[in-house]
Image 1: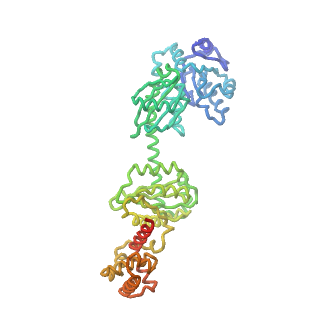
Image 2: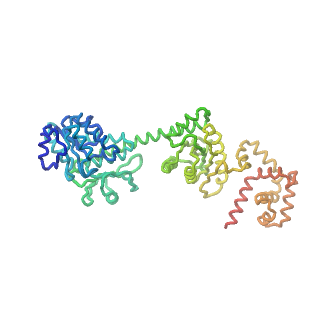
Image 3: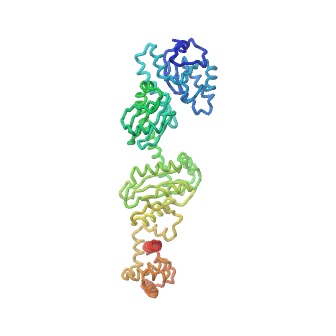
Length: 522
């Protein structure tokens, strides 16, 4: 059968837009949105398209010219353009391109399903009995092209909608719409799926016929639906589309998971390298490595050290939540989980830009975490130094929150730590701690003196406030602090003695001060 003879079959709804070669023999008909038809089409085939590949093209003229040239090379007998899906009429650019390339261009009426044209043409061919198998292969090949897209799931759903000349939707089992294409009733389809809740269901919504399937990918549930106003289309391609799309989604999810795992490993390795230390001469190279993760070269960054409170664990779900929330917020992030061994507490290290957005995002993640934020610097060679500051701040935050039940976590900046707190946070050796304990040993046997001294120091050396807090006379406070100073061999007028007492009692002083503030606002 020739192209001219096909035009005379009224049930096919074909109309010629460009017809330079009406005498060409037609060997088959296939629906496709692929970009290189020469790979799949046999000479004499008809290509049916909704124009998906032209939608959104900034340079429509070039895209149309490329398509027409590819069809001519593949010796396609005609391009049949379906109206009413993405285009209400054939783009002028495509008409002109087909005229220049001398390619037959036909339109398919909006009420005629592509499946009807395919079935009619292919039933006349020498391999009609293999048509079902060939059609499945063609659909699969067409959908496979979506994997190469920058947004494979969106591209896949668009191609599914084009192949059924209707609409396609993918929902999470929570009801959130992941992707959709076409003008189908998105909310009504979800409502119907929720109400029916049966696999492989076929339902009607007004003039729309809908087929859907509930699937599970990587532990998450999804609903996949295809919809068309023509019941015959779903009867012919619905099952094939759902089967193929389900497998394609699984493959795409697997590839995305593999890519995410690879990027996460590269992310962690890069952070580890920076924390181990790099030379100044290599900073430019490392800034280039940071750019794919969203960092701007030589802009200040901050190291982050976080510890889970109450000996808890971070857990894969919390890690995923942290990473996904940073991505949604547009916060560049290097991230490395730690605490997988018994001698290191669970938590993570990170690197973020010194921006209000990034620091604000980090503060929102503090639940059940003691977070230390290092000083800002635009020099990557200083990362080990900045990390030590972040770790000290995290240590102080952990101390201030660890023994407070119900705390939601705390973020402390290294910049905000006073010198005494900073120095005490650096006291790690038993010898250093024993020296502080020995200094105040004489007061351990005098609990009243010790209690009075701590209250006096916590309340800014205010005699009257200390007396009120202890429910004693002011003279009693004066006597006790004088006696305490004498036991230590000095006087409270000596700055050195006061400084030594603050270092020795810093924890108790801080707790008393916080308790007084809490009581004040009760």
